[in-house]
Length: 143
Image (cartoon, rainbow, N blue to C red; front, side, top):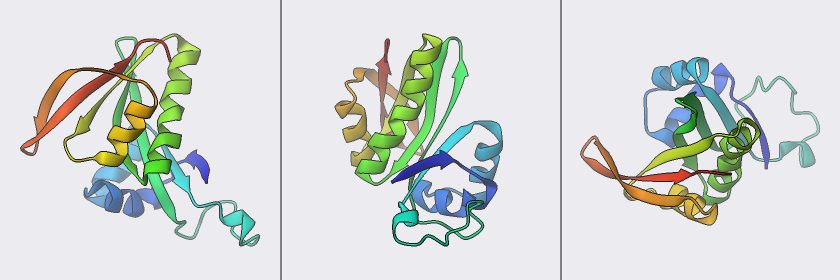
Protein backbone atom coordinates (compact mmCIF):
# COMPACT_ATOMS: atom_id res chain seq x y z
CA UNK A 1 0.00 0.00 0.00
CA UNK A 2 1.26 3.45 -0.92
CA UNK A 3 0.08 6.73 0.61
CA UNK A 4 0.14 9.94 -1.41
CA UNK A 5 -1.51 13.34 -1.62
CA UNK A 6 -4.96 13.23 -3.19
CA UNK A 7 -5.40 14.86 -6.59
CA UNK A 8 -8.57 16.14 -8.17
CA UNK A 9 -8.96 13.02 -10.31
CA UNK A 10 -9.29 10.99 -7.09
CA UNK A 11 -12.55 12.78 -6.20
CA UNK A 12 -14.83 10.16 -7.77
CA UNK A 13 -13.16 7.22 -6.04
CA UNK A 14 -13.08 9.08 -2.71
CA UNK A 15 -16.76 9.95 -3.14
CA UNK A 16 -17.53 6.25 -3.56
CA UNK A 17 -15.79 5.43 -0.29
CA UNK A 18 -17.32 8.38 1.57
CA UNK A 19 -20.80 7.93 0.06
CA UNK A 20 -20.75 11.62 -0.83
CA UNK A 21 -21.03 13.64 -4.05
CA UNK A 22 -17.85 13.81 -6.14
CA UNK A 23 -18.06 17.62 -6.24
CA UNK A 24 -18.02 17.75 -2.43
CA UNK A 25 -14.91 15.54 -2.38
CA UNK A 26 -13.29 17.72 -5.04
CA UNK A 27 -13.80 20.75 -2.78
CA UNK A 28 -12.39 18.80 0.17
CA UNK A 29 -9.26 18.00 -1.84
CA UNK A 30 -8.80 21.71 -2.53
CA UNK A 31 -9.65 22.96 0.98
CA UNK A 32 -7.95 20.44 3.29
CA UNK A 33 -5.02 18.10 3.48
CA UNK A 34 -6.21 14.86 1.89
CA UNK A 35 -4.12 11.72 1.64
CA UNK A 36 -5.10 8.52 -0.13
CA UNK A 37 -3.96 4.92 0.15
CA UNK A 38 -3.62 3.07 -3.13
CA UNK A 39 -2.77 -0.51 -3.90
CA UNK A 40 0.94 -0.93 -4.45
CA UNK A 41 0.63 -1.16 -8.23
CA UNK A 42 4.29 -0.57 -8.97
CA UNK A 43 5.12 -4.07 -7.77
CA UNK A 44 2.73 -5.63 -10.30
CA UNK A 45 2.62 -2.96 -13.02
CA UNK A 46 5.84 -1.02 -13.58
CA UNK A 47 4.17 1.02 -16.34
CA UNK A 48 1.77 2.87 -14.05
CA UNK A 49 2.18 6.58 -14.71
CA UNK A 50 3.71 8.56 -11.86
CA UNK A 51 1.21 11.38 -12.37
CA UNK A 52 -1.73 9.05 -11.57
CA UNK A 53 -3.65 9.89 -14.77
CA UNK A 54 -5.50 6.60 -14.64
CA UNK A 55 -7.86 5.88 -11.76
CA UNK A 56 -5.79 3.97 -9.18
CA UNK A 57 -7.25 1.34 -6.90
CA UNK A 58 -8.01 3.58 -3.94
CA UNK A 59 -8.13 1.68 -0.67
CA UNK A 60 -8.99 4.65 1.55
CA UNK A 61 -8.56 8.32 2.32
CA UNK A 62 -8.15 10.75 5.20
CA UNK A 63 -8.77 14.49 5.28
CA UNK A 64 -7.68 16.83 8.03
CA UNK A 65 -7.10 20.47 8.90
CA UNK A 66 -5.87 22.51 11.85
CA UNK A 67 -7.98 24.73 14.09
CA UNK A 68 -7.24 26.05 17.55
CA UNK A 69 -4.00 24.11 18.02
CA UNK A 70 -5.68 20.80 17.20
CA UNK A 71 -5.47 18.63 14.10
CA UNK A 72 -9.06 17.76 13.20
CA UNK A 73 -9.55 14.63 11.12
CA UNK A 74 -12.62 15.56 9.12
CA UNK A 75 -13.06 12.22 7.33
CA UNK A 76 -11.42 8.82 7.21
CA UNK A 77 -12.67 5.83 5.28
CA UNK A 78 -11.68 2.72 3.39
CA UNK A 79 -10.44 -0.74 4.21
CA UNK A 80 -9.44 -1.46 7.82
CA UNK A 81 -5.71 -1.57 6.92
CA UNK A 82 -5.98 1.64 4.89
CA UNK A 83 -7.78 3.48 7.69
CA UNK A 84 -5.10 2.48 10.16
CA UNK A 85 -2.26 3.48 7.82
CA UNK A 86 -3.94 6.77 6.85
CA UNK A 87 -4.70 7.78 10.42
CA UNK A 88 -0.95 7.85 10.99
CA UNK A 89 -0.71 10.85 8.61
CA UNK A 90 -2.51 13.44 10.77
CA UNK A 91 -0.93 11.91 13.88
CA UNK A 92 2.55 12.43 12.42
CA UNK A 93 1.69 16.02 11.50
CA UNK A 94 0.33 16.70 15.00
CA UNK A 95 3.41 15.22 16.65
CA UNK A 96 5.66 17.46 14.60
CA UNK A 97 3.66 20.55 15.54
CA UNK A 98 3.07 19.56 19.18
CA UNK A 99 -0.71 19.46 18.70
CA UNK A 100 -3.52 17.13 19.72
CA UNK A 101 -5.58 15.12 17.21
CA UNK A 102 -9.35 14.87 17.34
CA UNK A 103 -11.97 13.12 15.23
CA UNK A 104 -15.54 11.89 15.17
CA UNK A 105 -16.46 8.35 14.20
CA UNK A 106 -19.94 7.68 12.87
CA UNK A 107 -21.76 4.81 14.54
CA UNK A 108 -21.33 1.68 12.40
CA UNK A 109 -18.03 2.69 10.76
CA UNK A 110 -16.17 -0.34 12.08
CA UNK A 111 -13.00 0.14 9.99
CA UNK A 112 -12.44 3.70 11.22
CA UNK A 113 -13.36 2.79 14.83
CA UNK A 114 -10.88 -0.11 14.82
CA UNK A 115 -8.13 2.15 13.44
CA UNK A 116 -8.79 4.78 16.12
CA UNK A 117 -8.85 2.23 18.92
CA UNK A 118 -5.68 0.51 17.63
CA UNK A 119 -3.95 3.92 17.65
CA UNK A 120 -4.88 4.36 21.34
CA UNK A 121 -7.07 7.44 20.97
CA UNK A 122 -9.11 8.31 24.06
CA UNK A 123 -12.87 8.16 23.75
CA UNK A 124 -14.01 11.52 25.10
CA UNK A 125 -17.76 11.22 24.67
CA UNK A 126 -20.56 11.53 22.19
CA UNK A 127 -20.28 13.85 19.23
CA UNK A 128 -22.95 15.55 17.15
CA UNK A 129 -25.38 13.61 15.00
CA UNK A 130 -24.77 13.59 11.24
CA UNK A 131 -27.71 12.74 9.00
CA UNK A 132 -29.39 11.14 12.00
CA UNK A 133 -26.35 8.99 12.84
CA UNK A 134 -24.69 9.12 16.25
CA UNK A 135 -20.97 9.88 16.47
CA UNK A 136 -18.30 9.34 19.08
CA UNK A 137 -15.55 11.90 19.71
CA UNK A 138 -11.98 10.64 20.06
CA UNK A 139 -8.88 12.62 21.01
CA UNK A 140 -5.16 12.04 21.39
CA UNK A 141 -3.16 14.66 23.27
CA UNK A 142 0.40 13.61 22.43
CA UNK A 143 0.67 11.48 19.29
